[in-house]
Amino acid sequence: MASSSSSFSLLFPFFLILFSCFIAVSSSRRSLIDRPLPKNLPRSGFRLSLRHVDSGKNLTKIQKIQRGINRGFHRLNRLGAVAVLAVASNPDDTNNIKAPTHGGSGEFLMELSIGNPAVKYAAIVDTGSDLIWTQCKPCTECFDQPTPIFDPEKSSSYSKVGCSSGLCNALPRSNCNEDKDSCEYLYTYGDYSSTRGLLATETFTFEDENSISGIGFGCGVENEGDGFSQGSGLVGLGRGPLSLISQLKETKFSYCLTSIEDSEASSSLFIGSLASGIVNKTGANLDGEVTKTMSLLRNPDQPSFYYLELQGITVGAKRLSVEKSTFELSEDGTGGMIIDSGTTITYLEETAFKVLKEEFTSRMSLPVDDSGSTGLDLCFKLPNAAKNIAVPKLIFHFKGADLELPGENYMVADSSTGVLCLAMGSSNGMSIFGNVQQQNFNVLHDLEKETVTFVPTECGKL
Image 1: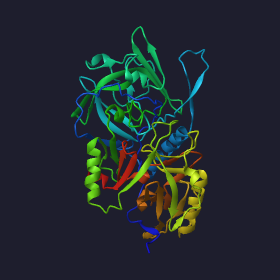
Image 2: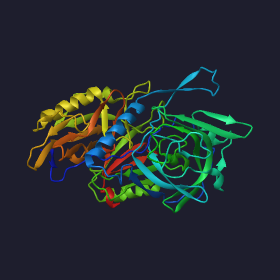
Image 3: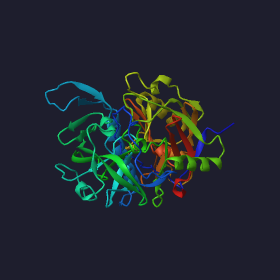
Image 4: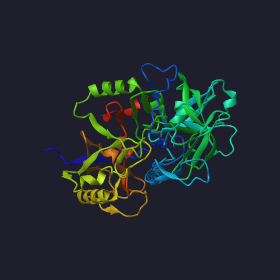
């Protein structure tokens, strides 16, 4: 009979991965089928390095954990919010519509260059957004960013988007200046941050060698809020038509996130056929039962999110007594579970988390620590002597696959405070499968098959 617990070594304590791809959710439900592909696309796809927003800072591991949790908390609140935006730009028009939520903060950055001549920027990567944007001159209201603000007048490849273009029509709400034939956009985030400017096309260069022209992006001249200050803008990887994935008309991408303990190695993002090629190559060397593929769901009210169909959870040898409907996506678009690269830990609907917390507590042989020193909901006091600690197994039962996580993907040890914590929390609505639980998996999104595949991978060695 298989063991119902995993060994967790205190000689090699594990810490939270702080992955986050800056999140903003596309509100658009239209397609860009009338728009040609951008030029100079790499045939086999391409690879991008991802850098954590706290890398290079003089922070202890527990400080990094707490910063990630704080960012995740605000992100969680924004994801659960429902934004109400004006239908028209006319201030006298009081008609309102329900709009998808835009997150507004992030954890991982990618390096890219914009324009001709190319100017380098670090942008937040966001699997929950369909808009690519950066701050632009002349900037009437902009936040501080680590690089100079982009000046479109100095780029020979910059071109404004016309009112009748497919890109402009793909915006959730646009305001066209017909005299200048320019398409204006406004994206408002759940924390009241926002970006406003002109939609345009430009040449984007990735990893100094993949130069792609004709990419649609927002040139923001009025940008408010502090959620973007980690970078100089955002690159959306969501389902919506304005995301990088959609504009390239790619159906596959994957990311492989290293542990926070691996301070030297970069995480990776793969786009196009290269994504599936890496997954197939890695998976071929593993037992077929180790590679897990599960179904994706769509939510018309939140069209950019990648929803998973969670059907249950097992702790140790016990499947939790939680109604399947607890994790279901409701007809009104609320609830459900998304897989999110931008939230640090996993959050479960509060009634389900309460049951999971009780089961974990009953199966651990350590006393509970109530000091609240880490910001996590459930921690245990460690013994003074270093030794292996048995922790209950944790299995997520998704439609299509049962995903058993390694101990380091849900337990966090901190020797300085002498605690061992569960890297999960509660949510009052939507559940989120966070990036700690995804570390050292190559996570492939196949938008043609509507699946997500998890392949155990040493991400720092890719």
